[in-house]
Image (cartoon, rainbow, N blue to C red; front, side, top):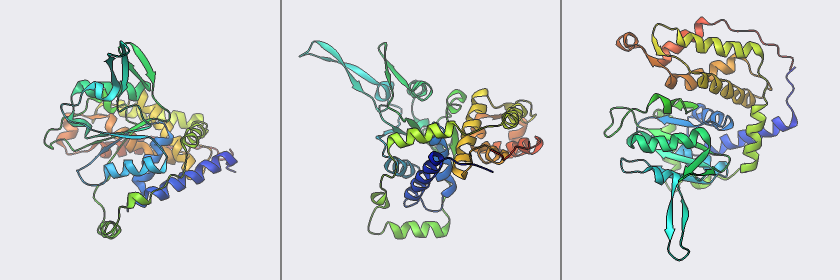
Length: 323
């Protein structure tokens, strides 16, 4: 039998409350809301890639309010400097000393809006923060507040002023998600809800920062059987040897897959990971980490198409449910 501790049950209840709050604003996109929460519980960063105006920024704002997080937003443009993100030292004439002025990254949730419009140097500054959880300015290292995660948005390649993110930076995002346009029914509901008020005003905090940190700790302790670890490794290895894939899943990607699967198990009400948890997050975690071969692109195949082939080739392990 699956035994869920009281601690786990409390985290699950709070997580459901967070989802309910975000659903007040984001209509008809429950799968996206769950996927973002999976990344947050996994201490991961999220890349939202989609057309302008589908609600990417609103989604980030709703989560910041429901999770009681200190939120900052940076609109990335070519003239945004690394110091805008990391902060800088400024000379104080009265004291005769240099004082640190905080950058945008000194927060819990940083919304990096249209990240693929800014310079490589600024992207690199954000990269260190995302990976290390620290900021170094003029030789002095400062810790980022906890919890901390980045929700970055980017418009599709081909939009005016955009450029492709390098593979090294894409690999730092736990998930890449695409919201897509709402259904007709959902869009009608959205229009009704915004006639006389902003639904964001109705979102209330339902979890504290400390409770979120505790939820991340509970997520880390979800049990992963050796058979599941082998399953993850075999999937990663299959991407590295697939004829349609030029660059396969990195070890960082395997770790991300394991972390996301733990969060999926927790939100499903289980204390252990199953192969279905891996399958649920496999595309969101892996699609942006692989590069297709020239022949694959010429045939019109997408990363999702190829990953579906990969997951269909690897035998699904049997995992004991007596946890």
